[in-house]
Length: 442
Image (tube, rainbow, N blue to C red; front, side, top):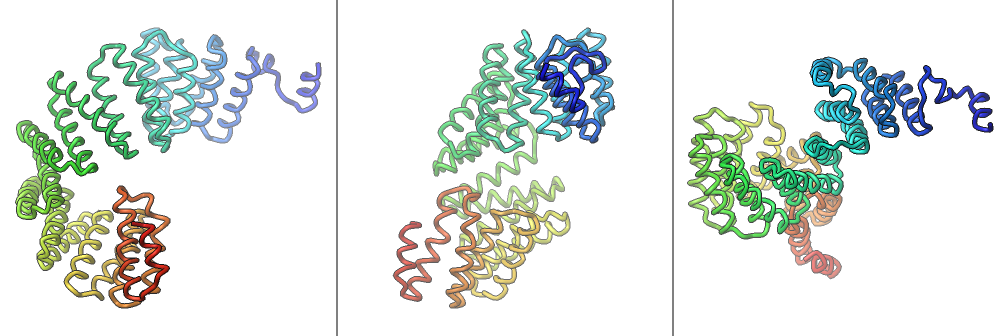
């Protein structure tokens, strides 16, 4: 009685009276939320609410109709209408699981991630006896959570995706799931686990005779081996990947692997072999007319000559990177060009021009909201000011890198810049406090 009195007093529609539908209390709340969101023009969120309502009461034909009608009134109608027609012919249009999961995956494809998660999780709550259908929803949820930046939840669903593929003896699905988990573990700097999944992906790909996936797995292995400083295995992996791409006549991928091999040679201080690889990379990129790869090859050549201490050639190649970046309007490549030019000019002794390029690097990284590059630009300018004897300003700039260092990939990236330059400032000024700071960072 009290609930009915409250509803009457506050003009709250009854779940039993709303358009004649009979809803449960929870499903009714979600349904009303969906109606309100529709009125606000928030169609994606409305679909998430209607799906959640149906998950509470999946036997309700009225709720299924509400979801379908909402989908047809949304901007997704153009893509969903033909799919709905196919489902109708297959007599699947009355399946709550199928309808919710189709809408959820469509929302995901157009970038409505949060609403997609609501739909896909509602689909899992409804459930299905088809393990393959359930697997497709789990896979979509892993993608959705990854896009939302929730790595932990994404990896939980990736693991479920792998287990589902194994249960189905779906080797292609298992191979894909291992690749996803490898990438996720790599991004979390859990390299041992990443290598395990990359090796599993490689083995399955070779059994399936999927050579393109095998080459990709080998390339990923190469990058992970670099991260743990196992350069011998890194080169071996990239060389095997390059050979497969060569046999597949995938020139772009072959060029990229040549660049990867060259980068590892630089880490081994084998600059001559690095330059040979990067020159071959450049040659293929020019033949293909691939400006992105051409810019990458010029950048790698600039770095190799820099490490070889041939700063004039390094500057020459970094200027070519800048030229390609401006022609293609690639702002991220442009920041790399400014960084390379700044480093080479500083090492050559032209501090003022180096400062100018690092200021360009800083300004563009701020515009791009690239926090990692912004931090590096501040660190580079700190080095310039230290060389000019402006120690207070140098220290201020290095301290300015602190908010950014967590986004830098390795401990070396994060600790070295401040530690090394604090040592130099400390020795220049004889400051005990700075030496203590340095020891802490080292």
